[in-house]
Length: 276
Image 1: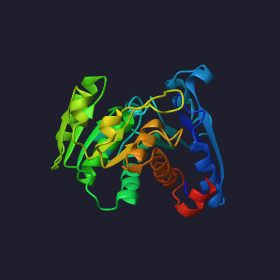
Image 2 (image 1 turned 90 degrees about the horizontal axis):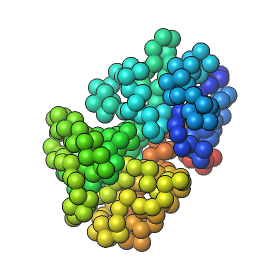
Image 3 (image 1 turned 45 degrees about the vertical axis):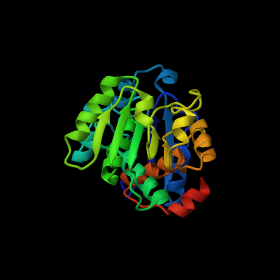
């Protein structure tokens, strides 16, 4: 799509009224002298199912989509995934319509790695507890393995999902010890890093995924939530002097990486960040 002067893009998700994704991609377009239409496609508001919206997008002129909560795993059987790591993650957030095919990518995975490296440079993640093993949680966990974490403890209210993710991660060739833990207090004990991969803390989902006592013991934290940017979790971590990687950084880098898939073009990240 690199030669196009106009892009019609969309975001499918349930709780996206406050999403900054439309702003990011419109600005990226402007910085590349492209006209970008980016629509929020909310199934409930459109009185359609996810399937109806997704399948009608190419005919309605959409060239690519972002997919967000709770559809990142659901959409997988409907798309083509070339990257074996993304196939293993089994969740995607970026789809490009190319003729009759729908090519899919996971820029949450690459975006998290970029966000981590920007804030913590070459520091090892150490022992980590990840709460939430859905679409974004899976991307975070695979990112931690790529970053060389010593141990990952997975917690989810749906223990089956946590166990499945542990199984999938342990099927990879790596040195990270991965385990699903049913007790959150056990999962967070003596951790270097705490990661929230749930919607808790998002607008409409108040609270924190972690207790203050767990936060007080940790060296660094990450919150996938970015609306609001300063969640209760991050406020507690800041008070405890933990190193913070905000969900905004994940949002920013996954967006930059998605833009490359959408347009075939790079974007000046400093100008994009300033304009956002």
